[in-house]
Each structure stands twice: as structure tokens, then as C-alpha cells.
Length: 463
Image (cartoon, rainbow, N blue to C red; front, side, top):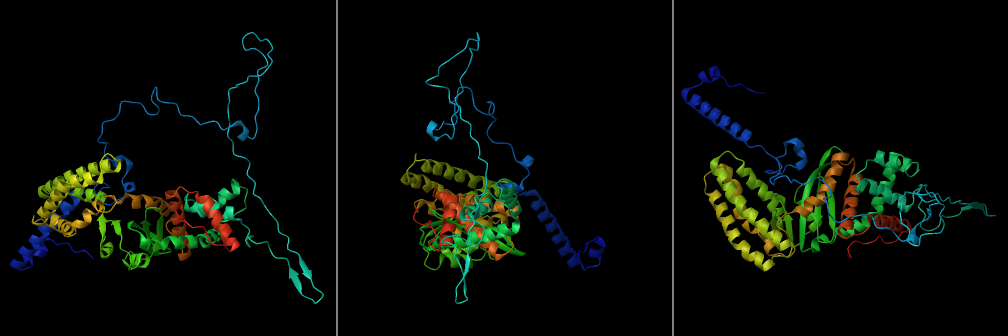
């Protein structure tokens, strides 16, 4: 219910009430103007780049190159290398019969012919093995049925088919109907969306021991990058958490964004450094590195503000932030040692902390809250200088989540807890295989075969 405050309504009030109402209306109009002036974009807030229309994006800061698109004249030629002749399935000699100028008949062969290779996908037909289980009756009257050989699944899908089905969803982001359509039209494998769900559950069961083993390694890590993104489980809100270590990544879907998730997966013994944003559920961990990419966007929001005092401090904070990234880029590419980085960062650290203190005592409500929080926890801005291997940004965690975010936008989350277990398991295995340069399809196939054989699942912790 909304009530319009008109002059007639104000006139019926006492003089003191009229003054207060007019003062409040004036302040309200001022705040509305300030909110309208601050337009949030992916460059000054946490909005994803996809939220902005492509035509609304600003022009590039660098001038447009005069060169045409594509390869430039004189650039080194790049072409597919020819494989050895003995690796070809068929070799067809192409010998001319007549001279192309005079037409005279030709004979003989070229000892070094021009080689041209054509790659083709073979016709795909599923391999179907039938197991005939004979039932024999004993003179005692009991009927005995022949058992399936060890490693043969009781379902109708072999390990490679289960692995391919899981990978089409968990890596290539296909829906269950699309997966069923691909299996039918490309592989000639009769399939339905319901059967895809059954194969999905088999893949989860096969890979779950591998997932659990990785999750148990999280409390022992010296540094972790952690981030989370919203998703859905059935009709409930949920969050997909990502924990990025040096050699592996663990994802977890939970129906809460509270610190209880961190307590569940990291435990009380965790003493490593955590790379994260400024969300308060991380604070209890104690040793944090706040993401400077987030801070740069926050400082840019100050620059975009209409208040001259806010804009001035934003410009002053952006300047050392850019210097920080320049020095870090040199350290990352090896042209600057960590000792040299610490030396160059000392005056930048002093400048940033002095500017934050200026914001604290500015008397401006737009600045005081943010600057107070950053100054009170200023040590969390510089942890990357003390911890070997830690970066100033949490980009690794955000990159790890990007595939999951696209998958979520296409699938609208999961429909059950069982679906969430499949999502977190597949994302963990696929991303960890990428980090370790391993073939995800081969690993999932081996895991499913071990599951059928009742053997131990393959490990991803030994890399």
C-alpha cells in the first residue's frame, strides 16, 4: 500500500510535523537522485559481464589497429602436420596417365610424391555383446542360472557409454534430451532422457570415492581460493561452492551460504590462507587475501559517483591499484623477483592505507563504511606478499566457476539432491583433470569399470 504525501495532507499537520515531513521528503529526493546517478556496471560492481548488453559496452581504451583481421602478410605458415604413412588406414597412389601439355602417355612412379591426407570420422556403430545365461535344473529340483562374468554390469550400458553420457552433461553442458538425441542420431544407440538419468546416477556412484578423497584433502592445503555462486535445487535456493587448490578443485552444492559449509569441508584444523571476496562468512578463517579485482571495481564505483569528495578518493585509490597490478604482472612473468615485489609494494601499501584512513575520517557516509572495513582488516589486503604462490586476485576461483555458471543458466539448476551430487562430482573431476592435464573421459571410463568390478576407484590426489 502506497500513500501519496500531498500538500493538502501536509497542511493538516502541526507546524513542527510539516517541517519534519518536508525535510524528509527533500532528503528522499536527494537520495533518489544519487541512486539514479550511480549506474552499476560489470566494471564498478560484482555484476557479471553477461548482464550488460553487448552494444552498451564502452569502446576499447586502446586505439583500433590499422591491420586487417586474420593472418598478416609474411607471418609463419601454420598447417596440420602429416602423420606417418604407416599410420594411415589406406594409401591411394594418384599417378598421371598423360602429359598435361602434350598429352603423351606417362609411366613410372615418383619417389617423393606430394602427400595429401584426408581425415574422416568412421561410421559409428555401437558394440553389443549378448550374455546368454542358461538356467539348468538339478535332479534335486532346484534351477540354477549361470552368473554374469566379473565386471559385466547388470544394466545395459558399458563403462565407456556411461562415461560419455556423463561427460556430455558435465563437461559439454548438454541437456538430458540433447544427450539422448546425440546418442541416437550420432552413435546409433537407442536412448531416452529417463535412461540418461540412470546412467548419470551410475557415473555419480562410480566417481564419488574419487570426489570424497579430494574433499578430504582440503583441510591440509596451505592455500585455497574459494568462491560461490547461486543456483537452485528443486524449488529451493542453493549455492555452488568452489574450492581451488594448487593441483585440484572441489565443488559442493549446498542449500546455504553460511560459514557452516566452510566448517563442514575445511574443519577446525585448517590453518591455510584463503583467497576470497569480502563476504563475512569467510572472516572466521582468520588468514585471508581479499581479491584486488573486486577492490578495483569498488574503487571504480567511487570514481563513477557524482559526489566530488567520493570521486576524488576513488581516483586516488585507483592509481596505486594500477601500480600494484603492474608490479604483480612483472613478478608473474619472471622479470621481477618476490623480494623486489615486496620492496616496490611497500610505498603502495602505505599510500593505500593512508587513503583508507582519509576515507574513514571524511565524514562522508558513502566512504566511511567501506573504508573502515578495509582499514580494520588491512592485513588481508597484502597476504599475497607473504604466502608463496598466492595471487592478489581470486581469478582462479572465478574461472573455475565460469563453466558451472553457464551450465546452471542452461539447466536452471538441479531437480533433486541426487542431481546436485552429480553436478558437484562431475565438475570436480572435469576441472581437476584439466588442472592435472589428464584425459577426463579415460578417467571416468576407468572409474565406472572399477565400480562394476567392485575395485577401488582411481585417485586424483597423487598429482
